[in-house]
Image (cartoon, rainbow, N blue to C red; front, side, top):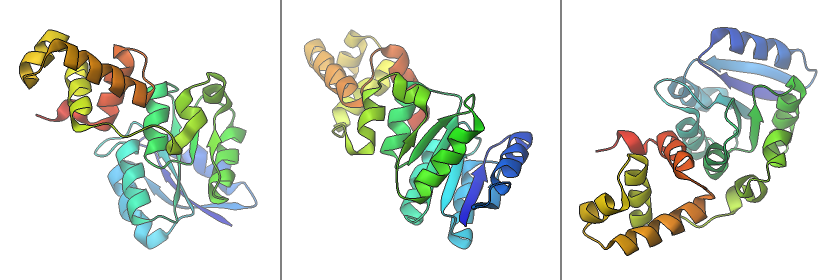
Length: 210
């Protein structure tokens, strides 16, 4: 029996998911949470096999919750359930250790397949995400070099709306240096434009930092 923890801030969504999962002969919902913080807090006691996390939740989003759950309960696999199919979100969740990534608009069978795959220690990506050919989706969490501190700061300032010249002045470096860091950082994260950078920065919590 696959023990599942559900985390979504919409109660009606959780109820629907619970009915779906409990209706499977090999699954059981053992806990529910309305935000990421509550989900993380339940893991030590419940020891679920799989945690199904909405990405957009109050107090702690799905990305932060995925990281925390993987850190404190390495035996608990994470499946992200979200309406976002952007490369920035896929990359961030897979890098955080999620085993599955499913879009809410997809058929319920996709979520069930992702839960079963995660319980087996395998990865499952929503076909819509995989069909887009995102490098992040293809490589999963094994791919991509880590950002340097300077690359991270350049991308953060870019997401906040700073121009290359503004970033150069803020960091005390040449504009050409900023361009190199920006290019390297976006390549490592498989991000193709400023909108992708903004979405990635928001999900990472960069935009709330001083």
